[in-house]
Image (spheres, rainbow, N blue to C red):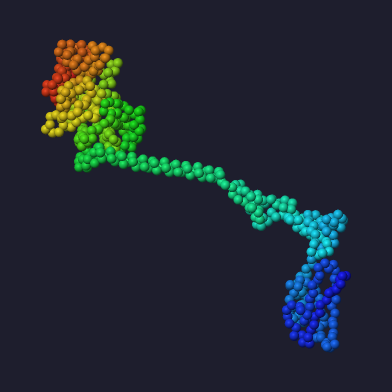
Length: 561
């Protein structure tokens, strides 16, 4: 092997027996190798056979071989290679020829001045060859380009985005000349490259805010639900306490121990049922108010209209007696007594439910400025008789109403009398003629003997009923107090008795009744009223006696009519 600068050689010796050639690296036995010096610009190979004086001949071989290749890739197989017909093919296939070459002997800066001989084409990079020691340069494609940098038109752009399955981007890829750009999805930042910073999610401010918002909302809903559940539980517990305190257990026992039909009709309402019926005890549902409480109109699920009385107070020491009286009142059956339908014991003060009478009270009718259309002697006598029979019936149980007044006598659509409001009523124990109680009643109707002695008897109701008869006959209020003119103040009961004593009856009675009724009828009913208004209870008739006398007057009136 030689060059213009000199030559190099290697010698391969062979022994007499080819089988003695050992496989391995070429170390002069059967083959030899040498290194091409750096900077060699040309070379030629000469293969000669050399004989020595000591050796007459070497084994007969038709030919020898010389080649340029990568010394790391060639492996000498010994004598086998001498007879291998595929030796050349194996060398061509397995041993590459590596040429580390450069262009010219000028560096890039000098070579670029002569554009005609400059070898690097478009989109290439020129690199000085410093390792050869003789100068020269090499051409290579710029990053993002591919092709032969020495052939026109040079290197072409590589479309990195062409194969989506092998995309260099995490998200979208846009090809550019010699490069590509990546973008990240919304809510992410970074260069989007797989060999770069990639795509990193932003701090999710909106999601975080929404999460906090929804979390707070759900927390508030949960707290609200918990508070409602606690409140509901407390409400249920409170209702249970009120139910027991108001004698609910006793009422259940009385109902279960009595299987009569009238007892089965007693209904124990829940507070929820009555709230629904009265629109949560709305002011629009109020149909009456008094000293003992408020009356609401309500509609039950079966469309039955009822009156719900909500009392203001309850004597807790009298609960057992109240329940007993409640049961008795529920058993009352009289056409002129408002029927008690049931009760509710889940409130602090028990509520009573009655049938609803829609045409107002006797007090409202007779105290109107204009005269009621029904007002006449016949109707007055009928109303007096019906109400007297109702009170006589109650006394037969025996129940003392204790608050008889025209405001507690209702009229239905046919002006039939209905006695109501048993809020102050008391049951008289058998064999007792009176009860010692705290004085209750309405000013103007209150029995003076009961007021001073606190001894409640049936005759106390008789006195109050006498005042109602006086109202009915005179259409005057039971009491009038005028602080500016004492002469105008009066008590109707005292005024009526005084008029009877002075023979001034016809000036006291309503003029229409004086015109329609006979003097005998008027004197008869006036004397009955006078007896009812006696100061001493023993001088008053019983309610039964009052009802009997009124029945006689009514019968006589019916016959004459």
